Length: 384
Image (cartoon, rainbow, N blue to C red; front, side, top):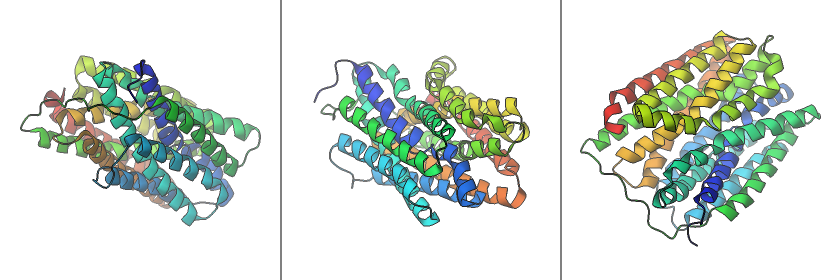
Protein backbone atom coordinates (compact mmCIF):
# COMPACT_ATOMS: atom_id res chain seq x y z
CA UNK A 1 0.00 0.00 0.00
CA UNK A 2 1.38 3.43 -0.89
CA UNK A 3 1.42 6.71 0.95
CA UNK A 4 -2.04 8.31 0.72
CA UNK A 5 -2.53 10.96 -1.95
CA UNK A 6 -3.47 13.40 0.80
CA UNK A 7 -1.06 13.26 3.77
CA UNK A 8 -3.74 14.90 5.89
CA UNK A 9 -5.61 11.58 5.90
CA UNK A 10 -2.56 9.90 7.40
CA UNK A 11 -2.23 12.65 10.03
CA UNK A 12 -5.92 12.32 10.89
CA UNK A 13 -5.46 8.57 11.25
CA UNK A 14 -2.68 9.24 13.75
CA UNK A 15 -4.88 11.76 15.54
CA UNK A 16 -7.68 9.21 15.94
CA UNK A 17 -5.21 6.57 17.16
CA UNK A 18 -3.87 8.82 19.92
CA UNK A 19 -7.38 10.04 20.74
CA UNK A 20 -8.51 6.45 21.38
CA UNK A 21 -5.49 4.96 23.16
CA UNK A 22 -4.23 8.03 25.02
CA UNK A 23 -7.05 10.57 25.28
CA UNK A 24 -9.66 7.91 26.14
CA UNK A 25 -7.77 4.72 27.05
CA UNK A 26 -5.40 6.41 29.46
CA UNK A 27 -7.11 9.59 30.61
CA UNK A 28 -10.82 8.72 30.84
CA UNK A 29 -9.99 7.38 34.31
CA UNK A 30 -9.74 10.97 35.57
CA UNK A 31 -13.40 12.01 35.04
CA UNK A 32 -14.69 8.55 36.04
CA UNK A 33 -12.55 8.35 39.18
CA UNK A 34 -14.76 10.46 41.52
CA UNK A 35 -17.76 8.23 40.80
CA UNK A 36 -15.69 5.10 41.45
CA UNK A 37 -14.33 6.52 44.71
CA UNK A 38 -17.86 7.32 45.87
CA UNK A 39 -19.45 4.02 44.80
CA UNK A 40 -16.64 1.69 45.86
CA UNK A 41 -15.34 3.68 48.85
CA UNK A 42 -11.82 3.75 47.42
CA UNK A 43 -9.09 5.59 49.31
CA UNK A 44 -6.98 8.14 47.44
CA UNK A 45 -4.03 5.76 47.82
CA UNK A 46 -6.00 3.00 46.08
CA UNK A 47 -7.11 5.41 43.35
CA UNK A 48 -3.51 6.49 42.85
CA UNK A 49 -2.32 2.89 42.74
CA UNK A 50 -4.83 2.06 39.98
CA UNK A 51 -3.53 5.03 38.00
CA UNK A 52 0.06 3.98 38.61
CA UNK A 53 -0.75 0.48 37.33
CA UNK A 54 -1.76 2.04 34.03
CA UNK A 55 1.48 3.99 33.88
CA UNK A 56 3.47 0.87 34.84
CA UNK A 57 1.86 -0.88 31.89
CA UNK A 58 2.81 2.10 29.75
CA UNK A 59 6.42 1.67 30.87
CA UNK A 60 6.37 -2.08 30.20
CA UNK A 61 4.84 -1.56 26.77
CA UNK A 62 7.46 1.02 25.84
CA UNK A 63 10.26 -1.30 26.96
CA UNK A 64 8.82 -4.16 24.94
CA UNK A 65 8.31 -1.98 21.86
CA UNK A 66 12.02 -1.11 21.94
CA UNK A 67 13.18 -4.74 21.81
CA UNK A 68 13.98 -6.96 18.84
CA UNK A 69 11.12 -9.24 19.92
CA UNK A 70 8.67 -6.92 18.17
CA UNK A 71 8.98 -7.62 14.48
CA UNK A 72 6.69 -7.61 11.49
CA UNK A 73 4.10 -5.11 10.36
CA UNK A 74 4.03 -1.87 12.35
CA UNK A 75 0.43 -1.36 11.28
CA UNK A 76 -0.53 -4.74 12.77
CA UNK A 77 1.05 -3.78 16.09
CA UNK A 78 -0.68 -0.39 15.99
CA UNK A 79 -4.12 -1.89 15.36
CA UNK A 80 -3.53 -4.64 17.92
CA UNK A 81 -2.62 -2.02 20.51
CA UNK A 82 -5.80 -0.09 19.73
CA UNK A 83 -7.92 -3.23 20.03
CA UNK A 84 -6.40 -4.20 23.39
CA UNK A 85 -6.79 -0.63 24.64
CA UNK A 86 -10.48 -0.58 23.71
CA UNK A 87 -11.22 -3.99 25.20
CA UNK A 88 -9.35 -3.38 28.46
CA UNK A 89 -11.14 -0.03 28.83
CA UNK A 90 -14.58 -1.53 28.29
CA UNK A 91 -13.81 -4.51 30.54
CA UNK A 92 -13.44 -2.17 33.54
CA UNK A 93 -17.25 -2.11 33.60
CA UNK A 94 -17.50 -5.77 34.55
CA UNK A 95 -15.32 -5.87 37.67
CA UNK A 96 -15.20 -4.20 41.06
CA UNK A 97 -12.04 -5.59 42.67
CA UNK A 98 -8.70 -3.83 43.03
CA UNK A 99 -6.92 -6.82 41.48
CA UNK A 100 -9.01 -6.64 38.32
CA UNK A 101 -8.71 -2.85 38.09
CA UNK A 102 -4.94 -2.97 38.44
CA UNK A 103 -4.55 -5.75 35.89
CA UNK A 104 -6.84 -4.14 33.31
CA UNK A 105 -5.25 -0.71 33.68
CA UNK A 106 -1.79 -2.27 33.38
CA UNK A 107 -2.82 -4.00 30.13
CA UNK A 108 -4.40 -0.79 28.84
CA UNK A 109 -1.25 1.17 29.64
CA UNK A 110 0.94 -1.28 27.73
CA UNK A 111 -1.41 -1.06 24.77
CA UNK A 112 -1.32 2.74 24.80
CA UNK A 113 2.49 2.71 24.69
CA UNK A 114 2.40 0.44 21.64
CA UNK A 115 -0.06 2.77 19.95
CA UNK A 116 2.10 5.81 20.67
CA UNK A 117 5.38 4.23 19.52
CA UNK A 118 4.00 2.58 16.37
CA UNK A 119 1.74 5.45 15.35
CA UNK A 120 4.71 7.80 15.59
CA UNK A 121 6.87 5.37 13.61
CA UNK A 122 4.20 4.98 10.93
CA UNK A 123 2.98 8.56 10.68
CA UNK A 124 5.77 11.03 11.44
CA UNK A 125 8.49 9.57 9.20
CA UNK A 126 6.07 9.23 6.31
CA UNK A 127 4.89 12.81 6.66
CA UNK A 128 8.56 13.85 6.54
CA UNK A 129 9.05 11.83 3.36
CA UNK A 130 6.39 13.84 1.55
CA UNK A 131 7.51 17.18 2.98
CA UNK A 132 4.55 17.58 5.34
CA UNK A 133 6.27 17.30 8.72
CA UNK A 134 4.16 20.27 9.84
CA UNK A 135 1.17 17.92 9.99
CA UNK A 136 2.73 16.20 13.01
CA UNK A 137 0.83 18.75 15.11
CA UNK A 138 -2.43 17.21 13.84
CA UNK A 139 -1.21 13.79 14.97
CA UNK A 140 -0.26 14.92 18.48
CA UNK A 141 -3.52 16.85 18.79
CA UNK A 142 -5.29 13.51 19.07
CA UNK A 143 -4.68 13.28 22.81
CA UNK A 144 -6.56 16.53 23.42
CA UNK A 145 -9.34 15.48 21.07
CA UNK A 146 -9.69 12.19 22.94
CA UNK A 147 -9.76 13.92 26.32
CA UNK A 148 -12.46 16.33 25.11
CA UNK A 149 -14.49 13.49 23.59
CA UNK A 150 -14.27 11.42 26.77
CA UNK A 151 -15.23 14.44 28.89
CA UNK A 152 -18.33 15.05 26.77
CA UNK A 153 -19.20 11.35 26.84
CA UNK A 154 -18.84 11.04 30.61
CA UNK A 155 -20.60 14.29 31.52
CA UNK A 156 -23.42 13.57 29.06
CA UNK A 157 -24.04 10.06 30.39
CA UNK A 158 -23.84 11.23 34.00
CA UNK A 159 -26.62 13.75 33.32
CA UNK A 160 -28.79 10.79 32.33
CA UNK A 161 -27.95 8.96 35.55
CA UNK A 162 -25.28 6.59 34.25
CA UNK A 163 -23.19 4.74 36.83
CA UNK A 164 -19.43 4.34 36.60
CA UNK A 165 -19.68 0.93 34.91
CA UNK A 166 -21.67 2.38 32.02
CA UNK A 167 -19.04 5.08 31.55
CA UNK A 168 -16.27 2.51 31.10
CA UNK A 169 -18.38 0.43 28.71
CA UNK A 170 -19.27 3.45 26.57
CA UNK A 171 -15.61 4.55 26.48
CA UNK A 172 -14.59 1.11 25.25
CA UNK A 173 -17.21 1.22 22.50
CA UNK A 174 -16.04 4.66 21.36
CA UNK A 175 -12.47 3.34 21.19
CA UNK A 176 -13.58 0.42 19.00
CA UNK A 177 -15.14 2.88 16.56
CA UNK A 178 -11.82 4.73 16.47
CA UNK A 179 -10.04 1.45 15.70
CA UNK A 180 -12.10 1.05 12.53
CA UNK A 181 -11.28 4.61 11.43
CA UNK A 182 -7.54 4.11 11.97
CA UNK A 183 -7.61 0.81 10.05
CA UNK A 184 -9.09 2.69 7.09
CA UNK A 185 -6.82 5.75 7.20
CA UNK A 186 -3.39 4.35 8.11
CA UNK A 187 -1.86 1.89 5.60
CA UNK A 188 1.22 -0.18 6.33
CA UNK A 189 4.55 1.32 5.35
CA UNK A 190 6.45 -0.04 2.38
CA UNK A 191 8.84 2.91 2.09
CA UNK A 192 12.17 3.65 3.71
CA UNK A 193 12.27 5.77 6.86
CA UNK A 194 13.25 9.37 6.54
CA UNK A 195 16.99 9.93 6.91
CA UNK A 196 18.11 10.97 10.36
CA UNK A 197 19.76 14.28 11.10
CA UNK A 198 23.52 14.48 11.49
CA UNK A 199 24.56 13.85 15.07
CA UNK A 200 27.32 15.59 16.97
CA UNK A 201 29.78 13.74 19.17
CA UNK A 202 27.82 14.98 22.19
CA UNK A 203 24.59 13.42 20.98
CA UNK A 204 24.49 10.74 23.66
CA UNK A 205 25.00 13.29 26.45
CA UNK A 206 22.29 15.54 25.05
CA UNK A 207 19.94 12.60 24.74
CA UNK A 208 20.59 11.57 28.35
CA UNK A 209 19.75 15.07 29.58
CA UNK A 210 16.54 15.05 27.56
CA UNK A 211 15.58 11.64 28.93
CA UNK A 212 16.00 12.83 32.54
CA UNK A 213 14.07 16.05 31.86
CA UNK A 214 11.30 14.07 30.17
CA UNK A 215 10.99 11.77 33.18
CA UNK A 216 10.74 14.76 35.52
CA UNK A 217 8.03 16.21 33.28
CA UNK A 218 6.15 12.89 33.46
CA UNK A 219 6.07 13.16 37.25
CA UNK A 220 5.33 16.88 37.16
CA UNK A 221 2.17 16.75 35.07
CA UNK A 222 0.60 13.45 36.12
CA UNK A 223 -0.58 14.29 39.65
CA UNK A 224 -2.82 17.10 38.42
CA UNK A 225 -3.81 15.06 35.36
CA UNK A 226 -4.94 12.18 37.60
CA UNK A 227 -6.63 14.02 40.47
CA UNK A 228 -7.86 17.33 39.03
CA UNK A 229 -11.50 16.26 38.77
CA UNK A 230 -11.34 14.77 42.27
CA UNK A 231 -9.90 18.06 43.59
CA UNK A 232 -12.72 20.00 41.93
CA UNK A 233 -15.34 17.60 43.30
CA UNK A 234 -14.01 18.13 46.84
CA UNK A 235 -13.97 21.93 46.54
CA UNK A 236 -17.06 23.65 47.90
CA UNK A 237 -16.42 26.71 45.75
CA UNK A 238 -15.60 24.95 42.47
CA UNK A 239 -17.76 21.82 42.75
CA UNK A 240 -20.07 22.98 39.96
CA UNK A 241 -17.16 22.77 37.51
CA UNK A 242 -16.90 19.00 37.75
CA UNK A 243 -18.79 18.26 34.50
CA UNK A 244 -16.66 20.65 32.45
CA UNK A 245 -13.19 20.90 33.98
CA UNK A 246 -11.88 17.86 32.10
CA UNK A 247 -13.44 19.18 28.90
CA UNK A 248 -11.42 22.38 29.38
CA UNK A 249 -8.26 20.25 29.57
CA UNK A 250 -9.12 18.51 26.31
CA UNK A 251 -10.14 21.64 24.42
CA UNK A 252 -6.93 23.44 25.37
CA UNK A 253 -4.78 20.37 24.68
CA UNK A 254 -6.06 19.81 21.12
CA UNK A 255 -4.47 22.94 19.55
CA UNK A 256 -1.55 23.15 21.98
CA UNK A 257 0.97 21.29 19.82
CA UNK A 258 0.45 23.80 17.01
CA UNK A 259 1.08 26.63 19.48
CA UNK A 260 4.24 25.12 20.94
CA UNK A 261 5.58 24.11 17.53
CA UNK A 262 5.17 27.75 16.49
CA UNK A 263 6.95 28.88 19.67
CA UNK A 264 9.76 26.40 19.02
CA UNK A 265 10.31 27.82 15.54
CA UNK A 266 10.72 31.30 17.01
CA UNK A 267 12.55 30.91 20.31
CA UNK A 268 14.12 27.49 19.87
CA UNK A 269 12.99 24.04 21.00
CA UNK A 270 14.80 24.15 24.33
CA UNK A 271 13.38 27.50 25.42
CA UNK A 272 9.89 26.52 24.23
CA UNK A 273 10.11 23.31 26.30
CA UNK A 274 11.24 25.28 29.36
CA UNK A 275 8.57 27.96 28.94
CA UNK A 276 5.84 25.31 28.68
CA UNK A 277 7.14 23.63 31.86
CA UNK A 278 7.08 26.97 33.71
CA UNK A 279 3.51 27.67 32.59
CA UNK A 280 2.39 24.17 33.55
CA UNK A 281 3.99 24.61 36.99
CA UNK A 282 1.77 27.68 37.50
CA UNK A 283 -1.29 25.56 36.68
CA UNK A 284 -0.25 22.77 39.05
CA UNK A 285 0.24 25.31 41.84
CA UNK A 286 -3.14 26.90 41.09
CA UNK A 287 -4.87 23.53 41.53
CA UNK A 288 -3.97 23.52 45.25
CA UNK A 289 -3.59 27.21 46.14
CA UNK A 290 -6.65 28.64 44.35
CA UNK A 291 -9.52 26.28 45.13
CA UNK A 292 -12.14 28.54 43.57
CA UNK A 293 -13.72 28.49 40.12
CA UNK A 294 -11.13 30.80 38.47
CA UNK A 295 -8.25 28.81 39.96
CA UNK A 296 -9.61 25.46 38.82
CA UNK A 297 -10.28 26.77 35.32
CA UNK A 298 -6.76 28.18 35.19
CA UNK A 299 -5.29 24.88 36.36
CA UNK A 300 -7.25 22.95 33.72
CA UNK A 301 -6.38 25.35 30.90
CA UNK A 302 -2.68 25.48 31.73
CA UNK A 303 -2.47 21.70 32.09
CA UNK A 304 -4.23 21.11 28.78
CA UNK A 305 -2.40 23.91 27.02
CA UNK A 306 1.06 22.56 27.87
CA UNK A 307 1.37 18.86 28.53
CA UNK A 308 0.98 17.64 24.94
CA UNK A 309 3.15 20.49 23.68
CA UNK A 310 5.92 19.43 26.06
CA UNK A 311 5.42 15.81 25.02
CA UNK A 312 5.81 16.67 21.34
CA UNK A 313 8.80 18.96 21.87
CA UNK A 314 10.56 16.32 23.94
CA UNK A 315 10.09 13.62 21.32
CA UNK A 316 11.14 15.93 18.47
CA UNK A 317 14.22 16.97 20.40
CA UNK A 318 15.16 13.37 21.12
CA UNK A 319 14.90 12.41 17.46
CA UNK A 320 17.25 15.27 16.62
CA UNK A 321 20.05 14.19 18.93
CA UNK A 322 19.72 10.44 19.52
CA UNK A 323 22.27 8.10 17.97
CA UNK A 324 19.89 5.18 17.57
CA UNK A 325 16.92 3.82 15.64
CA UNK A 326 13.93 6.22 15.81
CA UNK A 327 11.67 3.54 17.28
CA UNK A 328 14.14 2.87 20.09
CA UNK A 329 14.55 6.60 20.67
CA UNK A 330 10.80 7.06 21.09
CA UNK A 331 10.58 3.99 23.30
CA UNK A 332 13.40 5.13 25.62
CA UNK A 333 11.79 8.54 26.03
CA UNK A 334 8.48 6.83 26.75
CA UNK A 335 10.17 4.69 29.40
CA UNK A 336 11.49 7.78 31.20
CA UNK A 337 8.09 9.41 30.96
CA UNK A 338 6.48 6.23 32.28
CA UNK A 339 8.72 6.05 35.35
CA UNK A 340 7.71 9.58 36.32
CA UNK A 341 4.04 8.71 35.84
CA UNK A 342 4.24 5.53 37.91
CA UNK A 343 5.67 7.32 40.93
CA UNK A 344 3.40 10.38 40.77
CA UNK A 345 -0.15 9.09 41.39
CA UNK A 346 0.77 6.59 44.12
CA UNK A 347 2.94 9.17 45.90
CA UNK A 348 0.16 11.75 45.66
CA UNK A 349 -2.53 9.34 46.84
CA UNK A 350 -0.57 8.16 49.86
CA UNK A 351 0.36 11.70 50.93
CA UNK A 352 -3.23 12.88 50.37
CA UNK A 353 -4.60 10.14 52.64
CA UNK A 354 -2.00 10.97 55.30
CA UNK A 355 -2.28 14.76 55.16
CA UNK A 356 -5.78 15.37 53.83
CA UNK A 357 -4.44 17.54 51.01
CA UNK A 358 -2.76 17.36 47.60
CA UNK A 359 -0.59 20.37 48.54
CA UNK A 360 2.71 18.56 49.17
CA UNK A 361 2.48 16.25 46.12
CA UNK A 362 1.55 19.16 43.87
CA UNK A 363 4.41 21.33 45.12
CA UNK A 364 6.76 18.40 44.53
CA UNK A 365 5.40 18.24 40.99
CA UNK A 366 6.08 21.97 40.57
CA UNK A 367 9.68 21.35 41.61
CA UNK A 368 10.02 18.53 39.08
CA UNK A 369 8.71 20.76 36.27
CA UNK A 370 11.12 23.56 37.18
CA UNK A 371 14.03 21.09 37.27
CA UNK A 372 13.04 19.72 33.83
CA UNK A 373 13.00 23.26 32.45
CA UNK A 374 16.45 24.01 33.88
CA UNK A 375 17.97 20.85 32.40
CA UNK A 376 16.69 21.59 28.91
CA UNK A 377 17.82 25.23 29.08
CA UNK A 378 21.34 23.93 29.75
CA UNK A 379 21.38 22.20 26.34
CA UNK A 380 19.04 24.55 24.50
CA UNK A 381 21.67 25.75 22.01
CA UNK A 382 22.54 22.22 20.88
CA UNK A 383 18.95 21.02 20.32
CA UNK A 384 17.30 24.10 18.81
